[in-house]
Length: 80
Image (tube, rainbow, N blue to C red; front, side, top):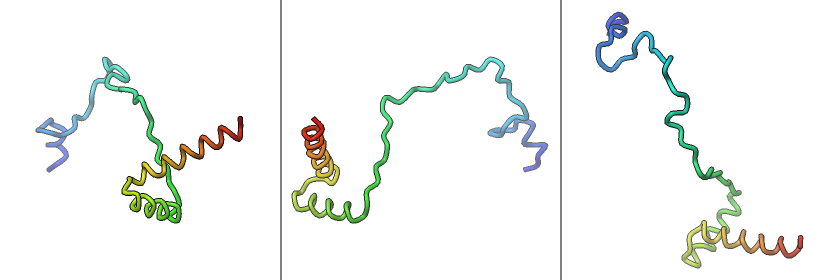
C-alpha cells in the first residue's frame, strides 16, 4: 500500500492528524482497588513447600500462607 493511500482515510488506517482539543483526560481510567504484587521465592524454598503441599493435598499457596500466618503470630508475640 502506498503512503498516499494510507493518508487518504481508506479503511482502518491512521489519519494524518487528530483533533484532541475537546478530549477529557482520564475519561476511561478506573483505579484498581488492589495492587497485586508478585512475590518470588527461591527454588529450594519452593521445592520444599511443593513437597509439603502435595503430601497434605493442599495447594502451594495455602501451605505457604499458613506458614506465613504462623510466623506473623510469632512475631506479634515476640515484639509485643
